[in-house]
Image 1: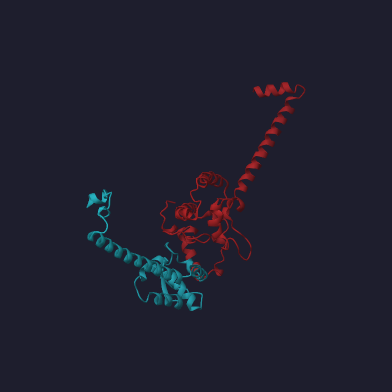
Image 2: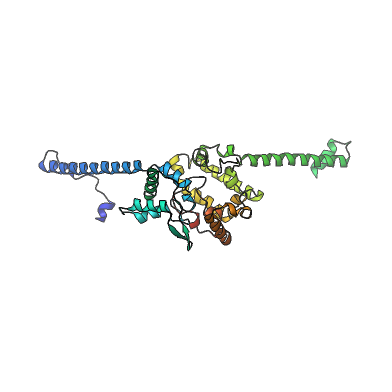
Length: 142
Length: 197
């Protein structure tokens, strides 16, 4: 196994077999099917990525977060008074109600602890549900 | 003193005092011209025009800086590149300028001449600047923002608390106020940098 990884064969064994033989066709067919499946997978993956990317308007989200003063205590990837968005995204990863939970957190001004002292979390400065949802999606996709 | 004898031979009618005064005046005049030219040169390298003379700065960090509070605000007081990135104290300024001349090498070799290359090196460059700003206690911020001159009444309760803590612990401004004029680089921030003070 190791030898094979270190010294990959120079010729493809299959390509040496004459085309048209049963073995050759069968092998080629299987490979084609695999390729098709792979291609479908790639296209689906790209579509999913595109849908996700399309659903977050990054500049709008960043502008709202800045306007709301979020960046005073939070950052995308660095440590500050509040957790980094990447940390929040990791915390909520895989949770179906992540967006709803985070939206409530941003809109209700819950009591939080900073340096052992209790304080009220600021409320996001927008009344537009779509704008807030976009900011939530932005945070969760970091 | 061969040059002195030579000078005296050239002007046999001049007295020693006249010649001496002439030499002194010439030395002073040349020194004055050189010092002024040097000061102008240094000041020129501190202008916004000089900094954005290269596309690496103009199209990346400068474009990000445009529109931020340090670029445009209600009172029109601006902090340009050198206000934050070049020490104002003369000796530190000259040392930083000498270091910067080595950075010109990066420009000549095209280290960050494309958007991709710039992004690839953004974090490393940010860490360098954060380190400098942490080591000098964010002196360039404090050239304008004085802790003692802050009107706490006008700050939010949260800001008051955070500043009091920063003052007590001697935290540098950059520990919290990073990514305010340029895009935040992807990675641990200044607070996570372990730097011996």
